[in-house]
Amino acid sequence: MDCGALCSRLDERLRTTEYADVDASENGLQVGPEDHSVTRVAFAVDAAEKTIDEAVAAQADLLVTHHGISWGGIDRVTGTHYRRLKPLVEAGTALYVSHLPLDGHQTLGNAAGLARLLELDRTEPFGELGPVHIGQRGVAPDAYSVDALRNLLEGELAHGGEGVQVLDFGPEEIADVAIVTGSGVDWLEDAAEAGVDAFVTGEGKQKAYHLAREYGVNVFLAGHYATETFGVKALQERVEEWGPNTTFIHEPTGL
Image 1 (cartoon, rainbow, N blue to C red):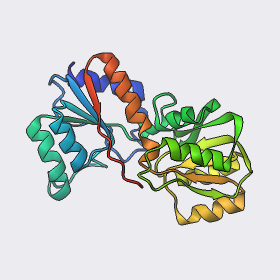
Image 2 (image 1 turned 90 degrees about the horizontal axis):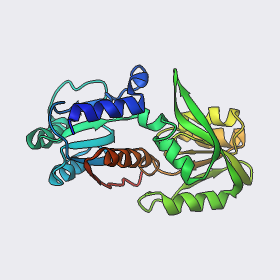
Image 3 (image 1 turned 30 degrees about the horizontal axis):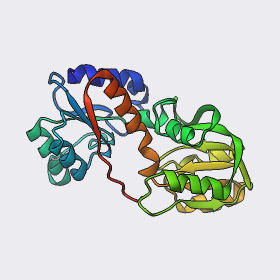
């Protein structure tokens, strides 16, 4: 499959252009020519030296990640930028990146995948960022207890043994849940004002403790990496349907 055609198909499915004005990431094809043939695609959450080396070792023609290597441009190709770019260029491995589009997509996205894990119904977009959304909200048919929801997240997510931190200041029964994966704690107030029982995100900030307590909402900090594997795995399934062979590179950070 032609690299340019594959990337264009991904851009179309993910509505990449709609996020261009709000995302620091340079989404889409970040490295590589559009005209080379793609028969094997690797997927990972992060475009880091380790995952890039593994993609090259797997003889991938294309690496698809959630976190890329260009956040508003690259001024100098030295240090980490050089060490990441060099193996891609030498091996002829292209790099495609989808950051916020892959957070907010209501079917393929990270929040959507986490909502399916929690078996939420009546899902709807959540987490406004300008004209787009980067999360999802839904209702559990059978309410969770705080411990039951924590246990489910800890049992199913790749949190690197760090567990799931809970700020349990909300109701004992949890039905209405809002989700913004990764570093989504800035949407905690929006979630609380919307009247949810729980807000699930990846990592926290100091202010989250006081906001959760003052608003009376449960907050689950389930790990940045752990909450953001859903999107790239969903893309892997789609790309396999289009013909190329695929592989997933698992490199949990515990953060």
